[in-house]
Image (cartoon, rainbow, N blue to C red):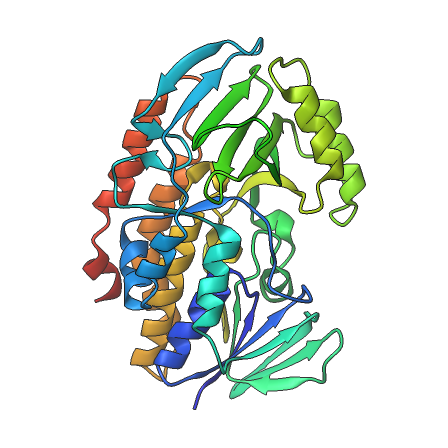
Length: 373
């Protein structure tokens, strides 16, 4: 029975563990965090990813936790409304579509619940990968070394697995010139299933309601060239946001004040990962680790779900892991490239309707059967 070590327990890693076990393999998941990560933004499950979720038996549960939105507003730097719609929302597209918008932590929890019996090692991370002809020896920060058949990196934009097996992040990352933070707060604004977007050209944000209208997810971001900062110093990251997100009216001072108190604050650059190959010997990558499209695309979660499914199916079809990796990449790469292009759209030159239409075109253009057959 093939033993597969998966680094990362978010959407891609958890979905991959489920589908590998369905193929008769033995997945083991290692996660740096001490428990499944909480917080984060609302994510979208669209197109082919809905089929994956349905085949996992999770569509109904996901729809019960779906985040419902009645519409959106866009404000200028002074807080004046310049656009309003009850038909679309930039985070989720057309409001009458069958897409599912759900909080990332809720989706991860649902997939984790389908992985009862899968071994998880929390609070640890890979420190070395030694590939040999008949397997891989993996060393960890805390646990004893393990011998496995394959290693899959599902550990996100700043993938440790990618660094160990393919080289430094700088070879693959493409900054998009934007930094984004997200945190939660009670719905002190009294918004009714609504999204409010605001900006002054170089900085801005979004406030959207979640959890049956009781909470807000607040996004604050700014344009900048790459910045050197400590990825583990949350206070310093909050200071970066406070320093850069200025010159905007409306509720910005209150949002900044609440950011300082937030316990689930997340901050990172908007960036894409572009690689000539997602595999090296017995190591491969899935989700953001392989091809982060950036949150601006709105397609990261769908790419993670579809990629995990395709990779597991290809590994289940042959004992030749190199052939399986090649087939997985051949089927996924066109889909990935189309979705990465979404994040590069000029949001100043394209209206919300145009951006929504482009996303729907990519979602609907993919032939799911062509990916997996």
